[in-house]
Amino acid sequence: MYPRVFRVVALSFTTMAVALASSTVPVQAEPGSGAHTGVSAAGTVAAITDRLARQLAAPLAGDARRAGLFSATEAAATGTALSGAAASPALDGALRQANRDVLAAKGLPADGPSLLRLRLAHPDMRAALSRGEAPLVAAAPADDVATTVTAYAGDGAKVLLDARKVPRQPVFVVEVDTAKALPLGLDVLRSVLDRHGITGAQPAADGGYWATQVRSVRLNDDKEPWIKGDAEIFGITGGFGLDGKVAVDTVTMPYLDNDGTTYYPNQLIVHFSAYKYNLADFVMMEDDGDTNYQSLAVALASALLTIVDGGAYVPLVNAILNAIPASWWTDDPDYVDSWYTLSTATGGQLNGAAGNGSMSLAPYWVAPL
Image 1 (spheres, rainbow, N blue to C red):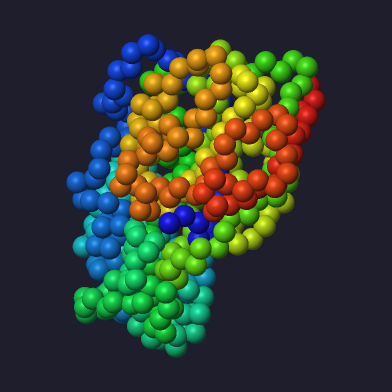
Image 2 (cartoon, one colour):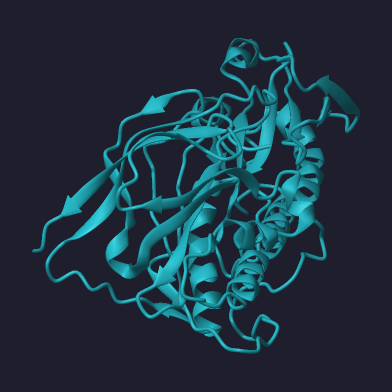
């Protein structure tokens, strides 16, 4: 559960303040918002991709190029988008339906782009694929601690693979392109929060202000299954705005590609010009395919709308984490780590509260323009 070899995007919601009320009305998704408001009738992303893997097994065992799917060489190298362009009408329909189901399962607009892609599970499988060995097709399991992976052969037979040992036979993985899904998800999240009183906070920094700079960052290598691919990390920075209302910000970290690797971005992640008490918290999470952004936004808004400034700083990490439905703690979205009570004076090497990551931080003065 949490990072594998991944691309990272830390999300901490563009500077926004939560409009608080003494009594909170339960947050509900509004009709006509364009985004799906509930769990897909077709099931979770894992169930949808597993079903599609079974449907693709026969075409992939034959000639994928003739089937109009993709170039097997291209898919082996970088992963290839799966769109409704297959030569077979039945396969074309299956691809289009699967993408509609995935958009619904992730709480994204129904008119969104194709999010499904296919990739070779491991570089070591390229040689067997080039020799013409028929590949298996599988979907990445939703459970990071799974001991087996269910794959499908060309005749539709199930093949159980060891989740910790790379198989000799090539395996194609059907998955969600999380790098493409994340911007769509952020748009949904911001839209939902805006509709429920979360508006932009205005920094007061005419004479410059202090920020927190990340000198280096490292997330632990947790030896996840070989079938797991890229994921997108998002983080939530929370504190109290200058008006005393809860505020959250967003920041992206596109350079953070791999777990077990130290990066030196010199990036600013907290801008204290918009925070009362000069204190903020930072929570890192990841989307590796199953995140429903609509549900996440509603849960966060419901939790944050209950917090009132009592005249002293109150950490928001627990409120944020408690807003996440219990079912998501398996793999959707993964909790990576959290850093409590960052201040204008915070510096040095700080391990996250969960022990999954560490950052070297330093105060940074942002001069006025």
